[in-house]
Each structure stands twice: as structure tokens, then as C-alpha cells.
Length: 328
Image (spheres, rainbow, N blue to C red):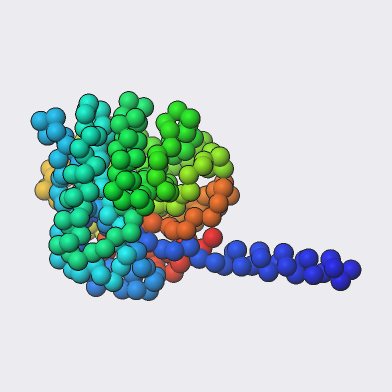
């Protein structure tokens, strides 16, 4: 009897420890000017954030050649944080022949230049590329060659790549980051393309069989879908309901607004009877996402990375929301 009580005590202790131990909270920084507002600094301090994933530059094609686009400028010192450079590479780059031969060295040297200008030493470098079956070989070769220059690499992973690893392949990196958002098609209907539980459920069980260690990226961003004549006319990034104050927009249903008279809004022309559909993820949905991830993940992630660090995004949630969501 004593032995059974002792086993029960150990099980309870382990269970309690698992439930209350928080994950490291981090953020993506996706602006071209690294300068933190007072609110952003306050949230980072309160949440004990020590690491930031900073988009350094994009890589696209110009006249068939890969070039860096919109590099980061550090106007604030990042020395307080462990900086992870993130390089977004358009899939088109790896659809071109002979792009991978010299690209790793060029990208590495450009990262080093940025690091030196801001007096940064980095431990990890992350690549963000939604590769296709046609570009997979070239992208993976790029990663293998880049590892010879910097051994600690991570890569972003999409849900479809988790479900079909035999087909899409697993990138040759140390770890991945599951981008748990942008699950649907941006449309004129009422569906939320940022997070759709029904779509997520078609993929998430495959986490149990995915061999690459994964951290999790969750969405705190929002956007507005501009709808005209029941067709998507445009996408307005970073839009919140508070931005409509003073403009002729009337709420007609949850997260949907109609333009009551012609107006110029954020340098965009909105005609009478156009509609704006707001897409975002509520704190309740973030909790739902975490419960599903916990249910199906093969192993506990080290970090929750929120996309992205922006004062408007942060103010949508309370600081305590982030702490609750980042518990595992």
C-alpha cells in the first residue's frame, strides 16, 4: 500500500510540473527599421523575452539574379536580446538553375555585414522559404552548403510540409518552426484565412510522426480583406477595428463592415457598398491552438514565437494572455 501511494505521489508531482512549466516566449520582428516603442519594450520586459527573430532581408529575383531586398536597419541597439537573423527567400529563387552555387556565400557575407554594423554576434540563423516540389532540391542544397558556413540553422515549416514529409522533404537543418497560421485561402466569404480549426485538424495529427524538432509560431497579426462586388479587391495589412473610427464604415456582422459612402482610407479608395472583412485570432482561439498543439506534438517545443512584434498587435492582448498561452 505504501508503495502504491509513493508511485501516485511521483506521478502527481511530474504532472504538476509539466502543467505549470512555461515555454520561452519570443517574437518575430518583421519591420525594416529596428526601433522598439515604449510599449514594445514594456511587453518584452514583462514577458522576460531574451530572444528576437529579426527579419534581416528578403531575397528575390531581378533579371534572373538573386538579390537582397529591403535590408534591416538597426536604429536601436539590439544588444539586450539574442538576435536570430531570419532571411525570407522567395520560392522563385530556387526555381532558377545555378542559383545555389554562389548564393550561400553571398547571403552569409551580407548577414555578417549587418551583424558587424550593429555589433551583433549570432548563434542561430533561420531561413523562411515555402519551397515547392520543383524547388526542393535546390533549396535543400543551399541549406547544406550554408551549414558549412554556419552550423546552427533553423527553417520555417508549413502544415502541408508536416503532413507530407515523404513528398515535400525535411530540410537539412537543426530544427524547424511550425508556422501555425495562414491556413486558408483569402476570400470574400466569412472564413478566416489566418486560422481555421477545421483545416488545422486535417494536418495537425501528423506532428506525431514528424522527425524534425519543432518550435511553434503563433499569429497575433491582423489584416483587412477589401471586398468589392463579392470579389477580393485588396488586402490591407495590420488593420484593426479601431482604425475605422471617424470613417464611414458600419458594422454589419462580426468582423465585417460596409462602406456607407465613398472615402479614401489609408491611401486606398473605398467605394460605397464595398466591404472590409477583418481577420485576426482572438485570445480564446490562441488558447485553442495551444491545446491542439499540445495534444498532437511529439515533443515539447522550447519556444513559442509570436508573429509579429508590433505595438498594435501587442495591445490586442493582455500581457497575462501571453503568459497563459505560453504555458505547456
